[in-house]
Image 1 (cartoon, each protein chain N blue to C red):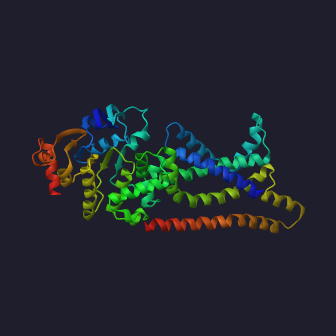
Image 2 (cartoon, each protein chain N blue to C red):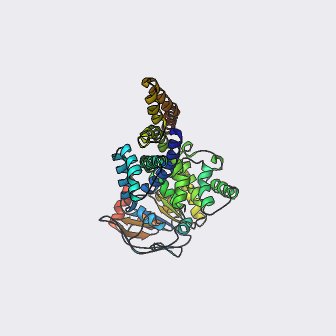
Image 3 (cartoon, each protein chain N blue to C red):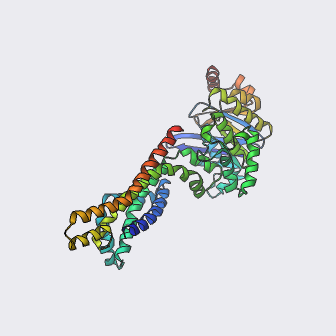
Amino acid sequence: MTVLISGASLFLGTILGFLLGMVRSRKNRLVNPLIGFFVDVMRGTPFIVQVFIVFFILPEFGVELEAFTAAVLAMTIMGSAFICEIVTAGILAVPKGQWEASSSSGLNILQQLRLVIMPQAMKTILPPLVGQYVLLIKDSSVVSAIGVVELTRVGWLTVVRIPEGLMVFSLVAALYFAISYPLIRISNSLERKLTVNRVSL
Amino acid sequence: MIRFQNVNKWFGSLHVLNDINLQVSAGEVVVVCGPSGSGKSTLLRCINRLERIQKGKLFVDGMPVHDSTINLTKLRAEIGFVFQQFHLYPHLNVLENVTLAPIHVRGMKKKEAEELAMEKLERVGLADKATAHPEQLSGGQQQRVAIARGLAMSPKILLFDEPTSALDPEMIGEVLSVMVKLAEEGMTMCVVTHEMGFARQVAHRVIFMDEGKIIETGKPDQFFDNPHSDRAALFISKILKH
């Protein structure tokens, strides 16, 4: 369940985050403050409160969600805010001349992003992005609070029945680590590889 | 080909283009010079609308550039732009740099675009570097690739914004000789540069700008040997000492 929730929300959050990040990097005077406000609110409030809002408060407005859907939704929204920040920073790190050169040769803005800007921005984006994935996977433990039976919740339910709390939660921790560790390694090696690349330029 | 009519532009309170009137005909080579901050780069960047003009009219090949509804892709496809800092795409090799716009803007087949690109690289003398990456090339070679990239769209106009200012002295010649060749083949060119040798050899006109105004226009020899205005004379004496 943890893998499913994390997987689904990372996937959706990445798409939404990239879209927001690309829009934000264009510095539109109308849209930007909105995205900026969204990102700040998401970063400035505890995730557990966001989960509660999605799960307990939305139904007040007639939006009834299953615990699983609510969990994925909350994680997607929070994830997209952090990913938006990473993507914006990555795009802004691409020299302005690349925009000018590509627009001078007649590419439209989507082509510019796809063919010229994003391939270069990915170097800056990838290491922190993968690092963010690790944080989000760990944050998925919070959704146990709304009754989604994911890894942490399974730990709780087991501990109620058997007395070996230390062992149970060591196991839970080990399972999280098993999911996160490969990502941590990927993040580290990306960071190393891309930094070396840059120095050799 | 290019017509500025009472063009004005401000950066905040700085009047960077002050009532510019200028006409460049097809096949003409115009050199724009002047002290830094005189507005010469801005003048050039308005032509393909990297900068918007705020007052007046600007026509390029019959298209009203001052009009916000024009088809920018069409305008820019007619104009090649060469930057001081080259701005090659670092994640693509030389051939891909040159074929990118023909494939995605002109809708050419990859093979067709590659043949065209090789022909343009041949013209700038770099066909053997097609598979190299920009960072493996010298500054002069990078700038020649940038020129080939501009040529690949078969533009009617080529704009050069201080194309040799970022180069080591021994590489300036190779870039200038490519530009001379283009000029002699009848390309319409606007070149912001202080390279007097280039101006004397191929320019039909030299335009001297200061503080956002066109101060003086003349034939290269007349301008450099016998400028009318004091400001131009002062400027020329400075670049001669340099």
